[in-house]
Each structure stands twice: as structure tokens, then as C-alpha cells.
Length: 548
Image 1 (cartoon, rainbow, N blue to C red):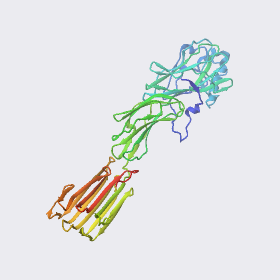
Image 2 (image 1 turned 60 degrees about the vertical axis):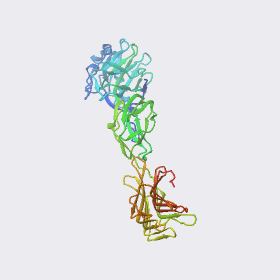
Image 3 (image 1 turned 45 degrees about the horizontal axis):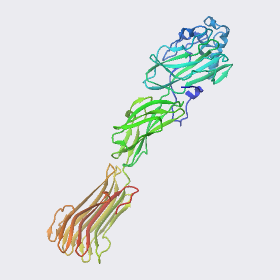
Image 4 (image 1 turned 90 degrees about the horizontal axis):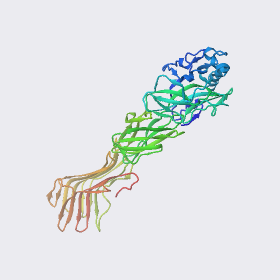
């Protein structure tokens, strides 16, 4: 990875409230100010502030010849005994600390920094600074980076080349591809001193729960190689998972999208290698292939578990994994932080997300009439119709008549019909129709009854399907002089040379979303078709035509 110069404010400054990325979290910070006064101090004698109370070590070559001093302009102008090896360069050593203080927005007169002003060749690749005990970063598998302020002087000769490592036990993990060269890439030049704030551009996915810091100067020369460091920070830049559903209230039978959003931290550096799993709520199942706009995506869904991995690119605010899902029944389904497992390089979601699969807004179609005659020479409109016709709006219709005569066909007593479309508290819809005919005398006494009723019902289920049912009731029914009680569905009686009679007739239609119920259906050999007490009901999905 390349070390990039950025202002410290870009690393730690507050973001606008509308910005999604959170700021990096400082897990370790060292300003080399704890207990410091007017005298310089060897870095190996320094103890940092609580809670870490960090102490430091270094290769012996970096603890002699004007190296390893925590210096400040507060120090005496004339080199004290500890700084005698600095000779005439002592004022410049003090100025290195002052320039870093000014760069960081502090007081250049009081700032302290770890300095190195090589008077003898230290040798390349030796440790210039290292923590003596690890720092806890909480759970492992975190993305970690660092920030450091660096200064360099005498840039006309060899430059200090600072390489930082994170320590996982005895394993040193580089946080760079090229060392920091403040001379070549300064943020500013203050009084002839190059200064800047540097952070790695590709954070490390750190598996351990404790880490240390190692600074190695890869420059081994002594003609130049003069500089200082300050404000060392270890930053947790782990991205955060967000969970949402879209749309929030799809109809059962439709799909929703479980959106798993990986949001970067505000420095927007590249993070590769994160992964996590999300268990789908009971009752939700995949409705298609999952997709991702993250870098190097790897997404699969098996046995109700979404497994996702990949990366987020440099400068990218967020990326998303989309999982289409469907529900078996209506209801609310939630994905919560407890449903997320196996997180590597990922902060958990902080809130639940829910989707409510609702009942479709079926169109109601319900019709009833007491009697209808169709014949070559006689007939007319249905008697006492009630209709709720192909509408998504709930409603009802009723009609009644005290008596009716159909010439040459029937005499009838009280006729009542009703049709309705209703919505239950769970959003499920029902279309219902009912027709009742009293005092029936059909075809000169061929069929008589005190009362007959037909009812048809179409009901939406919690799975999004439609069920239909039909019922008929007969009181004192006689056909051709014989009493009939509780005739079965589609009970057919044929009277030779007279008529075919169907009792309790039921006819499904609309691909099973509707049913027609006729209490009595007579077809004479003369071609007269008579229906007494007819009801039909159906439910139709939005955007489809109601069946006839």
C-alpha cells in the first residue's frame, strides 16, 4: 500500500450529519506529552498516558548520537548533558518539535516530539521505535490503520525513510508499500522543515485482538537522515453493516429486497477481505440470485443463510449486497443484529430492519340473483340482482322482492339477495354472494320448496392464494313428488321427455379464483333454462381482468 499525505483533520474531523460514514475510532494515541517538562528525555525512559501507560524501546543505534530524544523548544537553548552529542545541531532538534506542533495546530513553543539527528551511521532497517506491550483493540478481525505526523530536515542529502508495522505477537504486518519520505512529499515546509500527516491507504485486516507498533527507518546513512515523529495514532477503520428491506410492504406473492449495505469509515480507504453471514427470518426464502456492487464480491444463499464477502474500494462511501426474498405467508419479518454471524472486518448492524408482506388488494366480484329464465321465446333479466362488480373498493349490495311470477315457468315467494366485498383485520379479502328464494313452485309443481338458498364465497389466504366454497340449503324440497334432503354437489335428476335437473350445482371458474353456485338449475327438453337462487364470487389480482 502507498502511504498518502493527508491533513489530520481529514482523518479525525467530524463529518456532516447527513454523511453515512462514521469517523475512524482512535484505539491508541501517543503525543509524547505525558509528564514532560523543560528537560529532554530518552524515549526509552518515557511512559505514556493512561489507560495504556505505554513504554517504548528501540535498537541501540537509534538511542545514541543525538537519536531517540523527546525534545521541545521548552528545552534549554544550549544542549543539556543528555543532548551533548547533538552539538551545534541542538537548536534544529528543538525546532523539529516546534514545527510539528505548529503543523498539528498546537503550540510550537511547548510541543514535544521524538527526534533523530544521526551523527553516526545507524544502519538500515533498524527499529527506531517500538511499543513494549500490546494494546487491546477489542475483538479481533478488525480493519486497522495508523496516522503519524512526521518532520524532516536537511532534505538536500539522504532522507529519513520511515516504515510502520503493526505487531500481532511476533508477526510484523507492514502498513505500507513505500516508506514515508517527508522530504519528498511534505504537507508544508515550516522554517525549512518539511512536515506532514501520513496515513496508510489500505488498512490491514488485523486478526488479533492486541497489537503493537514498530517504526523502522530503512535509511542507513548519516549524511542527512534527520527528522522527528509525533502524534502516533492507531485507528480502527472497520466498515459497518446496515440492513434494510425494500419495498417495506410488498404484497404476498411479490418479492422484496434485503439490502445489506457496507458503509466505509470517513477516510474512505480501501478495505478488502471482509465477510459476514446473515440468517434469513423464518418464513422468508430467496426469490432469485443475490447481487453485489462491492469489490470482488462473493455472495451465496444456502439453507436460509446469506454468506457475503468482498471489498470496498478506495474513495467509495458504501456498497450493497441485494438479496431478493419472498414470504410464504403474510406478516412482518425482521432481520436484527442477532441474525448476523461470522463477522470478519465488519461492525455489526445496530438496528433491526423489517418487511411486512401484506395481502394483495384483490378486486371483488360478487353477484347474486333469485331467478333467471333463458328460453327461445320467453325470458328476461335476472330477478332481484345484487352486484359488487370487479372493484378493489370494499362494499355491498342487497335487494329483495315480496313475490314474483314468471309466466309459464314459476311462482315465487319472498326473494332476497346480497353481494359483498370485505377486508378483514389482517388485510385478507373476501367476496361473497347469497340468494334466497321462498315458496318455490317450478314448472307446475315439478319442483317445490319452502325455501332454497345458494351462497358463494371466494377468500384470500395468508399465502396469497384464493380459496372458494359454495353452500346450498333446501327446506321441504320435492322433485317430481319425491322429497330430497341435502343433495350432494351437482346432484343430477333426469326426467325423461321433460327436463334435466341439477341440484346444488357448483361450477369453478377463473382458474380456481371463483365459484358459481346454483341451488336449482333446470333445462327442459323445450330449451328453457331456469336457474333459481344463483350466487357467484371471485377475487382477482390487481392488473388482471375479472373472470366472467
